Picture 1: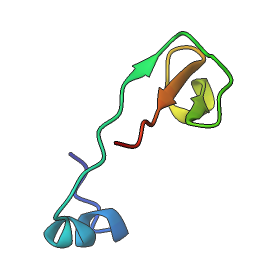
Picture 2: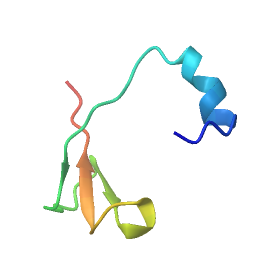
Picture 3: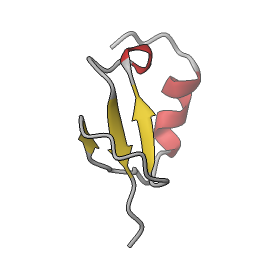
Picture 4: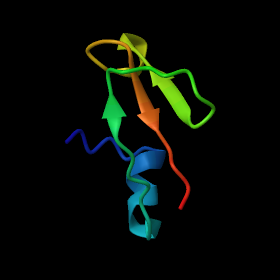
Length: 53
């Protein structure tokens, strides 16, 4: 990794939880989705689906 000493590097020691969500190429256009594309670092348009328990 880069080790640039930026904000992300300094925050890693404080990380105690992580959000895990499936990413799919099927975009359903529902409120629980976040759409990502190549500008977000993905290979193609896709959706992250957040489902609250």
